[in-house]
Amino acid sequence: MELILSAGIGALAASGIYLLLRPRTYQVIIGLSLLSYAVNLFIFSMGRLRVNAPPVLEPGGVGDLLRYTDPVPQALVLTAIVIGFAMTALFLVVLLASRGFTGTDHVDGREPPRGD
Image 1 (cartoon, rainbow, N blue to C red):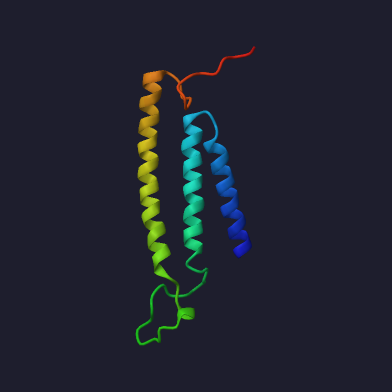
Image 2: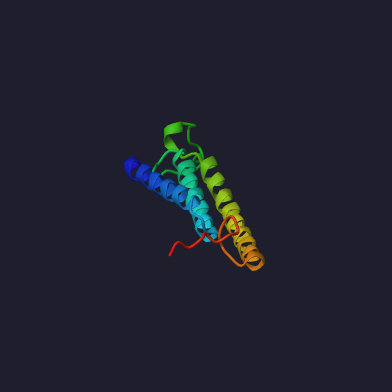
């Protein structure tokens, strides 16, 4: 399970970095989203991958660390999802405004010269 999760995080991070280096703003926004998904999965995996384990201590249970899942990474990921959604919405608004002002969707605001 850890190998699959690690490969998924690596694939998301690599795809996100590749898209961040592209010249068009829409690709940059998608790259930032993929990179934030990779970071969210990484944070979530830091809370130990446990199946069917309660996130908090059971009533009357002893505080054994092997019997429960850490709730802090789950709360951090939930917060990061909300912040990532707001960030993506803001970037899309800035993208549309920039395209309206410059007439292009390139990151630097200029179309590359065509070598036809």
